[in-house]
Length: 101
Image (cartoon, rainbow, N blue to C red):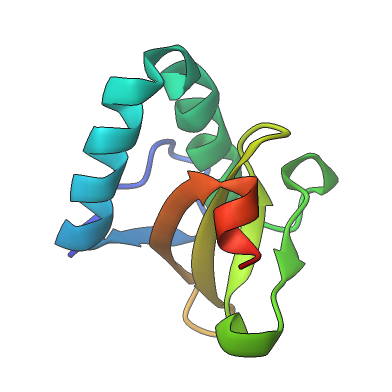
């Protein structure tokens, strides 16, 4: 399940499950133009998930315990962040409105 990190500077590891991989594959078929921004976001995420440019923020309600980063103004990536274990688990990539429903 863990994914290789994208740079030698990585401080966190990414865990990408099959469900997320399937969802991302479908997302990028619909939005191939966002792939470079996504790759850049993941590279930044494994170095410092708290970098202001990522706009990381915690969710509440039914998604309490999950976090979100902005891919673009319209799209978000939902994730869990285990700071003590330095692991980031990608949960969902979706439209901004879908995250907050």
